[in-house]
Amino acid sequence: MQRILFLTFFLLSWIYAEVQQPPLDLSISHNEIGHALFEYEDPSANMAIAQIVKLPTAQFTPVTKAVPAHGFTESAFWYRFEVENKKDTPVSRLIVFEPSWLDHVDVSIVSASGKMQSYQAGNGYVYAHRAVDHHLITVRHLFESGKSTVYVRVKTPDPFIVSLSVASESAFFQKNIEVTLCAGLIYGGIIAMLFYNLFLFFGIKEKYYLLYVLYLLAFLFMNAAYNGYTYVYLFFDYPLVQDWAQSSGIFLFSVAGLLFASSFLNLSTQHPRLYKLTSCLIVFIAGVAVLIALLGTYRYHVILSIIFAMLVSIYIFGVALYAWVKGNNSARFFLLGATSGLLGTIITVSAVLSLIPFMRFTYKANDFGIFIDAVLLSIALADRMRMTRESKIIAEKQAKTDVLTGLYNRRAYYEISELEYKKVLRYHRILSVVMFDVDEFKHINDTYGHSAGDTVLQSVATLAKETIRNYDYAFRMGGDEFLLLLPETNEKQAAVLCERLREKIEKQKIADSRGNTFFVTASFGVVEYTQRETCIESVVKRADEALYQAKKAGRNNVKILDKFAIV
Image (cartoon, rainbow, N blue to C red; front, side, top):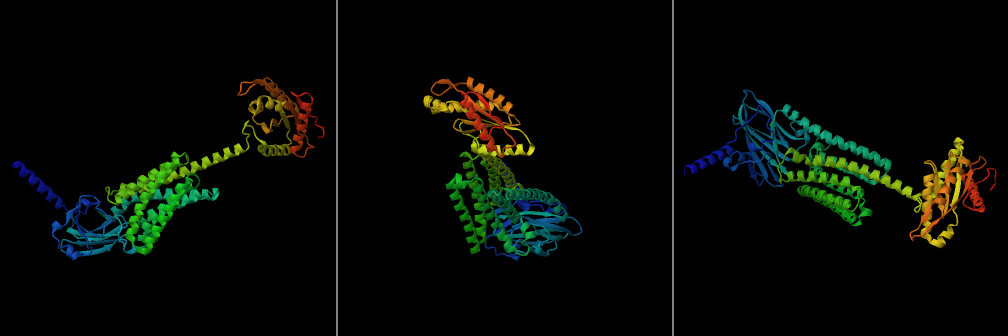
């Protein structure tokens, strides 16, 4: 029995202590004073302060969280707390409200002498109505000596969150230095990436760079809107515009994110069905945003903007994951960025909807998540540029490479030979040209088959690449006909090189896919450029004549055409 009485006494003492919160000492600052608040819900949102002060104390319930939150509600909520000025003279203090989107904040303060003073604040009033020049909602009051009771009424169509602090003006601005530095870091980084990628767009003309710039602009506008910066610098005389800017910014950010994802991941060509689905989703979100705006139902505009922001983040993550699984290597950094953005969005939306505690980290998680997302997307863009460049180089190389032998093809010959010929003319250099082919190649094809002929060509090409120098060129001109372009080489040096290659070919044992083994030989025609020749084709023509003479002389030999021979 004694234990029951003791537990009952302890429980009643605890409840009494919870109800009888000590007043806040105004000599120090108090942040997020939710645990010192008592709350009363007014479903009609019509009660006045005169009615509230007459309510019994039991009508107010203690707030159990540092930051009261009620999601979306039509009700008005009243908060009551006590403060104490222990000095003999009045002290000026700020009552600060966060987030900055609260539309109607009414503050009434009853002093120890029974005098009441009321203030009106919030985004429902022009910016000049603010107590101090700051994006957060503030009320300044000169507190008399002794205890004062503060009543606060909050009503907003936005997510209902009330982070309430009491501080001196100097302490308030000192505390906000960290917030300002953090915001400056995020905004500065985003703006730097924005201009960098804008310059890249002007240089490269790739659409996804422009859409990335749009994505960053949308984030800046959205973030500045719901943090109240647009109210400070743009819409200070237009509270209604400021309200709609907040939800419209979220819609814009969702649409910009989808546009960029669709372009960057190349959905139109690689995943046509996803491209159509994404395009329909973009049109649907934009249509919903415009329709609800025309109907003037701001509350639903806000609710749907937040829901769509969450769904779009999940959708973009899923599309990026799908693209990466399907072999789109450029999606890897995009996927990491989408993951960061998704986590930040989930945490912030959950905090805004009162699903998790509202704290600075949870409220700002989207800012940091999107900032990391933007950095990773910049890396993704750079990675895609590198991959595009490599693909272009590979494609160009393949276009100039003979598929069978790996030597330069005739297309490459036209480009390279013209450049080398211009060097000869400009710098008075020497140049030799060699034409050679495989002896009796048709007989090889007829006897052993075309696959054996291909093996012969591949073997000869390999020996040619091994024999020439790094700055020489070997071309397959077609069939079994090859051409060597030898800069800084006279006809005698070229002939020595060709003799070495001829011996290698003669000694090379060829084995085809059917198990046949045989040997082949080759004939070579060598010429050196002479000043009387007006184009590279005349040099090649003489080399072809030299090859003809080598064939005529019995094949499997190297023939140098006389410099003065006319072809």
